[in-house]
Each structure stands twice: as C-alpha cells, then as structure tokens.
Length: 121
Image (cartoon, rainbow, N blue to C red):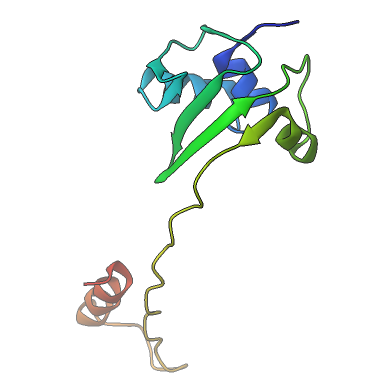
C-alpha cells in the first residue's frame, strides 16, 4: 500500500492510542499535513510532514513507512522521522504538607488549605 488514512496511520505508528482519538484531534484542527488542515480520511503518503499538538508539545514528524498492520512502539518509531523540538519543561510544584499520623480527621479549614496548596495558590 502506498497511501493511508491519516487517522489510521497515527494509530498504527503509536502516536495516538486509538484511531478515534486521532480523528478527534484532526477534526479539532490539532493535526496538519504539509501545513494544511485536513480531514481524518485524508490520504497520507511517504514523505508527508505531519504536525500535531499533543498536550502542550508541538510535534513534527515526516512519514517514512506506511505499515499494513499495528506496530509495536519500538518499531513504530522507525516509521517516521521525528523533527520535533524538545518537550517543554514542566514546573515542579511543592508537595502539600501532610498531617501527623493519628491527628484525626482534617477539619473543613484544613481541607481547604490542603486543596489550596495542591492547586498552587
């Protein structure tokens, strides 16, 4: 086969977990092929550049192989050339303070303070 659906290829090379996840991202405008917005059933061929947003990471891959069946993650990585910039650095937040063992059930005020610390306010 020399052509594939975009959503199917993204699933076969393990860039998305399911084909429906890939199709949803495509319909949402998060995936472009050769700089153009596309539909999930659009054809994909070797040499096409696929750009997509995965969380807050902008990925860019060049299609090398159009597989006929599902590939493992290790082999799937050989089906494209990854030209993506490195992933953004995630900020590390302080861990919330824990209560002493046996201190009893936290009060409503304690729970609100713990929630505030978890959210980073």
